[in-house]
Length: 275
Image (tube, rainbow, N blue to C red; front, side):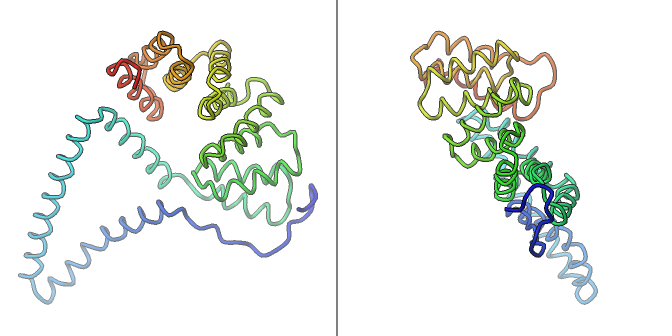
């Protein structure tokens, strides 16, 4: 590991796109290739081009109707499906429209001059684009060089949380909160509570999540996570109250993620909060 301020060594390693983004780009290119392909066919056989368009229209219509029927059935069986679709569409849209330039520039700067801050910046930008395998080693490198960087601990916690490494994630969130109380507008404390609940430390999770709400207020996600922790801790009445707050209509437009947790809370209320 290079020292702080030391030039990084080794050749530049290409940064591949995540598999989901590569698949989405491939589909876009395939759709874009249809008009020129039909034009080429029409030059030699106009009737064949018309037949292909007709058959394609029929199949697209059938697929659209089938997909609509499947989604309608899924929404009846699991009402949060529309919220889930909005969440996934938002993630895909952000990954396809966000500029990858800042990440590539940060990688280039790190190649010439390594520091904890530059490792952290690469990790932060990669995590923002959901490129977790790229983010993780850079966040770890940043902390090896500067162990008291609260932001690096927090982002490392987010990366490990996505990987299901709850113990490591909880320790990272706790350290970020210790170094900078209220870090990330309370998100370090919020995720710490969720990690504790998932690790079956339900009462500790309730205490941490209540502390988060006392200090930072709460949204649909925080109240939903508190409801789950209370339910697991045996407080069904408290859980029902938390789910009711999480399911309440928002006073203003909310993000796709917050809308997803509100939808989950509404299902909990419909089912009595115990399922």
